[in-house]
Image (cartoon, rainbow, N blue to C red; front, side, top):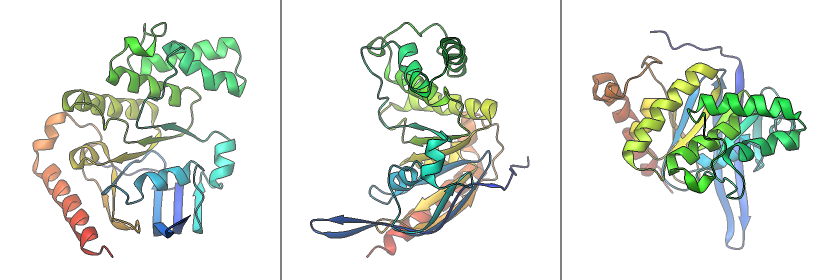
Length: 265
């Protein structure tokens, strides 16, 4: 099956550097990062803790600002893209307000953005259906499992219909059974919405299962050691993880991680 996508860059980094100034001296979080993400791609970032995966995602979201190189999002600066609400962001923790219902949590950014009450209601109903939480809008976060809370967090990020979804290890705290199910649901959601997704993970199987492109990063200073375009079909049952192609890709990711450690300084 052909996995080709529109090559128009949705995210483009050229020679990207980020140095944090600390009391103990400069910390080089990202160094000479070059990456192009096309429309509709599912791109996973994998590497050891502190390698700059989340930092890169935060640069895309204008939560951090590079100290060198260039970064564009939909042809704009990250700050301009943020003002135009070009992306939704899903954090490691669901981050739901406990005093608001699930619908109320999803409604909050829509209220801030000035959507009408009728438009808010329509969008809330639609995204709850997308993440298979229809009927749970009146529940409070503490009444839902961890996996359901993360789905509610994804629904909130989808509510204003941004073209880009940035996800910072959203399933890392969940058990393997729940994680597998949410991986399957995320692929279905991606197929339905055709969004461009940037996804941070520490899990090699998760990165290989979900992605059209896998970006392997080295320990600090964070650099890209390999970019792997996946040959796997977009429709992927869980048992594809037993296939020879899957195992070969996972091996290449593992080798990229080892090579990055070998270059560590």
